[in-house]
Image (cartoon, rainbow, N blue to C red; front, side, top):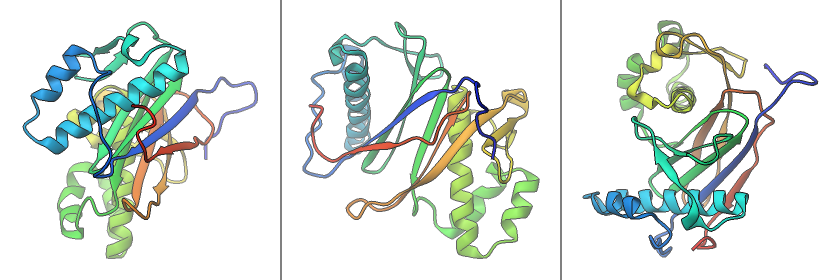
Length: 239
């Protein structure tokens, strides 16, 4: 595993997640007018709720970090749709959500991407159909040597790691996931094509929650970082 060497500069990472229970209210009072308009454009109530919850979590946590009001944050949007802090270029953040959970990753000292998925995000049949579009030929050959259940779990881990890596570059699956090569036994990813061979550092694991189920997660940073700690929220402490 590639780790930071003594004296090597490292990124500072925070991870936060919010469990959206059915009873949890998610008001949009701290969102900007542009964010409220975007939320209103969602046809799906569930998608709208996830979007608002992500912005509330983002604004609340980062505002607390910076010592300002959540409404005071200026969240700009890249051409690819990725939010960023225009007034704080040294802080990068990224959001991910799945069903009833929203996750936020914050990084000082580099870029960051995050992905989170439920363990049952894909059936074994769906995973088998998707694998050739996500994995490189070498990765696919390695996964096919595993039994069905283990194959599914390894594929899901690869999925979140690749998406987190591509999101750290501001692309997500708009770019070719096969351009990210996962190095076995190492936290470093090498990129080809869109990523141009740049190294990136991966942490990945699982979250177990009796109420909302189990999740696979991954973060990717442009600089090495210590193993991140999660802060989990199940109530409206931000609102």
